[in-house]
Length: 425
Ligand SMILES: Cc1cc2nc3c(=O)[nH]c(=O)nc-3n(C[C@H](O)[C@H](O)[C@H](O)COP(=O)(O)O)c2cc1C
Image 1 (tube, rainbow, N blue to C red):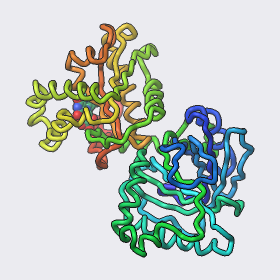
Image 2 (tube, helix red, strand yellow):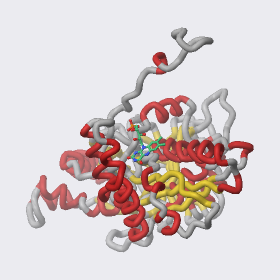
Image 3 (cartoon, rainbow, N blue to C red):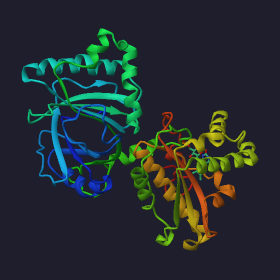
């Protein structure tokens, strides 16, 4: 999936809570031969009624990217499984610039065996092709897979999306495709919309809640590890300050993973003086945004003029004037003054903030490490903080509204000396 040619997909379907499934089942499957990567997903519209369904509905989906060395393992009673391999025909679409965060899962079968090839051809050369050519927003790749057993459901059409809010994107897919092929009542629309041999087994949309790579040979399996070690550098070297976000919501499971990363940062005497307040409420977010606006207007704007570029200044202007409040989630990272000396408090809370931002980036979210709103005394009152808890950083989180280029950084060579200051590295 995404930018990989994945020979096969093994799907598991369950109603188990996602966090429980991830904790109890994912590592077990990642340890099996032939399993490369796991992602797990939340059903956006459980019990959808507008399409026929021949396989029972389920709330959570796990997708294991597999190769020929994989055989489906025994399953607990509350988990069902389906194993697919790539068909001879390629996926269609445009590889997204970010990770796959949403899915449309379509399972179909032919009405009869003699009609199977005609249905496959319709699916590849008309249905999927027209959607890919129409490029509906958020749709990236559409890849056909076939059931390894040859049984039903016979084919999986795996639609990848670059946003977690797969349902609104899915609802827009047919209108966007109609724009290209013709409206209701036209021959071309009717030809696209259905085939006489088509039997729909399942259609639904999913949002991603987690991803984990299989341990590489020679590396110890670490429960909960979601990136190969190489990816650390990819994440650390490309992370940027995001000030504009999409409205798409960020699931609680995802926020919890970021907070877990934040709480694994170092702190003086391991005092762990961080406290997080996660603001989702729109009114509260707008009041936190107002703190930034007030501090920017009262001093920051003038102070920064001339110190930073005009474009940078304008970006902070927009962030302070509505951009911060528009982020779907704002995490206020606070310091507990009873758990660290004054000197060590910020030195402990800041690494936690950076871990949060790096983890967000690793999962395809944008974030901003900001301190300006904490200068407003009102912020502590808004959050109901007791006097020994101080807001220290404010981190808006969301899917980035724009893709940012690589960060501009001075080379470490200009910042590093060998043994003595002044002796070049
Ligand atoms: C301690 C600290 C405080 C910051 N405060 C703010 C802030 O109040 N508002 C803001 O827009 N950015 C803030 N930033 C973000 C910086 O502007 C950003 O990290 C820097 O410009 C590099 O941006 P880049 O990673 O996109 O290249 C802060 C960063 C740090 C480390």
